[in-house]
Image (cartoon, rainbow, N blue to C red; front, top):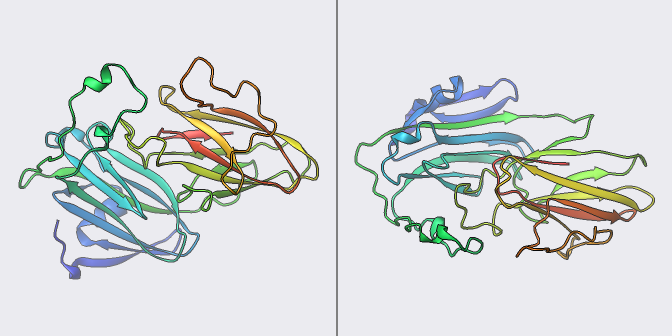
Length: 297
């Protein structure tokens, strides 16, 4: 979609006082939560200060409108997801690592190898007989679909009951989201609500290679304590796991339950763990959810 530069205007978000630069034709989508008509490409931008958060939501509203094998790439803040009829949207909470303008963009994909076609590393059954997804997926001239582009500045404040909202980018140990525990000396519970909807859900050919969430646990206790963690995902049929690392990237297993081992299976995936944390220790929890939503306790 071609938008003349003079059709841009400035909206001030009343709740956060954050300026949002939008194309005139996208104003209805942001102001009233309506949709746009996507033909080739559309975009919208928001100006954020370092540390400010925004709720990012984009996707095909009516997947049945897509052409055969139709695909659209959604990009924001260094993330990119190709959506289609069986996984038609993206949602994430994003914390700006630095001040600047951040653009949410949707672009039709017509010539790109699908990650569905990557080598299968897990399933050895009849799934491998599925036909390869075509590399070339033409978008008919004049074809339009109802599409949603939404950038909503959010501020969740400080929870008094140990609730944490997962926010990107936190894909590595270096960008891990900090959680402080143990200073009270009593038992503490922290509950993280997160998601991995920046990943392909229907058939993720990059499973185990992208989409991880890391949490930096700073233990402020004065004596060794038992740490437990449990991951729950919305879909019990996807493979998920949590692991614990130290800052040097080595897996930390002190205090691990003996049952945390490969048993009658090919992989060591576990969604629960126990560890013994030492005073002043810093530990990193890796969450591989492979699911649009999850809870980590």
